[in-house]
Image 1 (cartoon, rainbow, N blue to C red):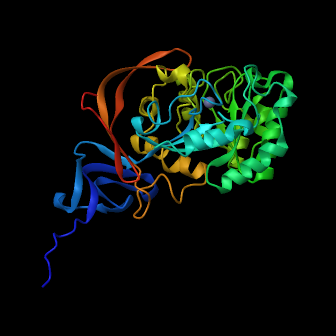
Image 2: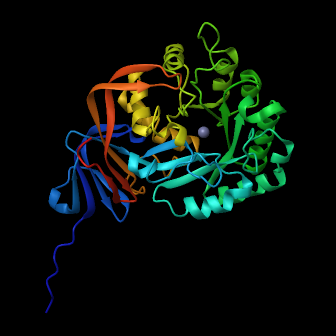
Length: 387
Ligand SMILES: [Zn+2]
């Protein structure tokens, strides 16, 4: 005699009735997203009875899990870092956080063990070109550099799936009297380890032209739309010739908002000039967590506010940053078979006060509210429903 088994459910999780926006697959329509065994099982029209758990996404947007290309989540390296899951990451709709150089070679092992291997949020990182933690200018002393440690570590940790490349702070604040040299050392370390390069731009020296000249295909400039003197725009708010040349060579541009590095004015002029943008990111740390940045959703809403369309804002927070870190085959897309990292959020209409890094305040008509974060098929954040 055969025992009768209950009919097995087709899916573990069904996200029903939302507007699915997945730029990598050119999808923007009302549909259900099905998840099984931690992976995307399909996008289509499925019955509520087919899944063990159902999320009602009616009136909401369903996108690939957001990628924050620039944040700081290792207090053992950069003391102003925040918690990868509670302050950023899954609590805020972000399923992948890229740490931008909070750790150099001397602290990397504890970063990997204590943060990358334990956080629920996927944490990947750029390795700081300076090996040690320091209170002064991070790159301000020759003793900060040890290419014989940094290069093999970057290569090994890239192969292990944790390190994306080298981070350098190309600004007087961090380079002290060393000028452009730290950028040259970072480029050397990136090229010799076969990994990526992320360059923070800020106060000169080094001059922006000297920094950009060293960069090529795939290298990332972060803080691209800061409002300081000596950025990408000239006195007449037009992009410098060196910026167009860099874009032509394939240099990529990332927001990296932070406490000092995003200006509404620069953003509008850059957009008006047609400058390319490749990623939206927060540069979250304790100095901007309680404003002006707050989180990824607020940062994305600021880009909506300066004129980008929602699907473009999502592209710049999912598939485009995935490309920048060489993970477009695994991250930032809801294709069947991918690891199921999904963000469910609402576009809320109202009057929202947004402040940029120049302390300019504007009133925006829309903000983003994260309802659910799904990480590897599991619902790891639910909104309390009170906004
Ligand atoms: Zn940063």
